[in-house]
Image 1 (cartoon, rainbow, N blue to C red):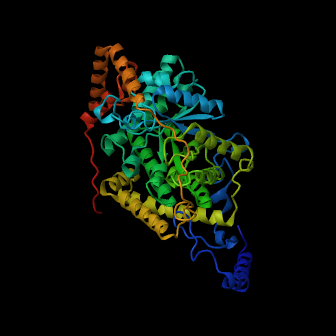
Image 2 (cartoon, one colour):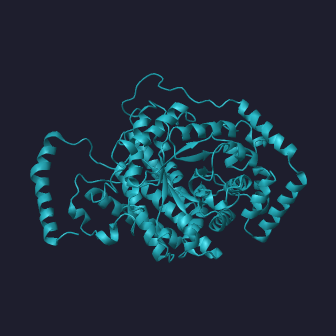
Image 3 (cartoon, rainbow, N blue to C red):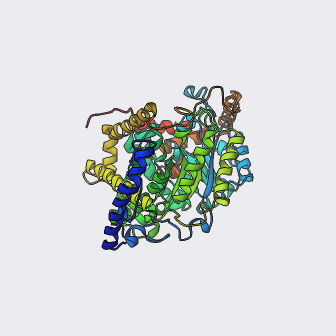
Length: 566
């Protein structure tokens, strides 16, 4: 992009500035720190010039918005056309309470729904399972049967509103319930839209919630991909999630690399199933964390789009441009929130949300300031939503496409993050003898991810404890006294109400139809067929989530993690 003579002149001028202007000034007053780095400990220089992006090729590395390699955004107008989807995470108690919260958020301007499930539902346990006692409705909504789904979306047009479902081991069951709900309401399957997290590889890498082993878990994910391609074109059956990898303590580069590797693993598995890459890839989506180092996060998002475009085109022969466009949801960093001085979290979330917007996210969840202490209160949820609305309507950040594009710093950092992430992806591919999928599975089995993330997490915490990494209100500027706000409390009676609904469903359903549905599911699992059509039929008979997941566990077996030595 730059003339070599001009670059030489710039380098010479920078050296002169450093020796004659900066160094004498630093000698007098010093600098705040001996070393400046991002949250991920990525060291940054004090000044960037065209010399730092001398190798940048505008057309092949940047291009224009809506054109390959999509570094500058996947849509030609980005937020000048319409803003990102504001999708606040919501869920607690029974479906009745969460339905009320859904309506509240819609009335206050939210443009998409996002469902949080309680731990029993996440793990495929019914509310009346002994292991569910005390956890029902506590950290999300309890969903046992199609009846709960009917209540959850009462009064909500599922043909108009898109919904995200943050659920993994039992995601195929919830997917089946949503399709069954649409069928029963007379909403065509091709009209319902939304996203299922359904990223089981990430579970074995970071979040550690699973029911069956990795390979059959991957098989079920591919079942949903195949079903969605054929039946529900507006449903994204996977949201490949770096969010939880980052929450487990990874760096930004690790989050990006491990997430994209998981995505490529799903692509390979679907292709091996016999699906054409352009048949299903446009429905894949991604989910990233946005942390405090605003420029690192923007660079990460931009590098993600470029890597995805190049790999999908070159490794998997994707021809449909939609198959090479990485579209993603962003959530602000829950791990960054502090129980101390929780109102400080409003500022953290604002910075992180702005990074997501400047980085070109397609949808955004802003965490509530009280989430380090409890499920979000109504007041905290409103502040979180208003944060997005102020960024969209008042800040001007949504008025320009890729506003930080062309920044010497951001372009240099984008290149560095891309190179470091690709080095990880190539390493994973080598672990699988040329297959990213096999490399991901090998990495899970051999404890590769566990070690990489644990080391990064340990290094970050050491910097916090040493005071090198400042956390305002925790290791600097702390105050005495209780600063906790009023918190949301989920009453124990919630469990009683949920158990009563479940008992009523079991009393009313046709037991013979339930037994027949479970037998058909078991036979399909043994035959290796796609379970999704059978699941839709089963949940229409009000077969419970736990009954379905028990079949999977009995047929596929269970899994216990072992950390090996490579």
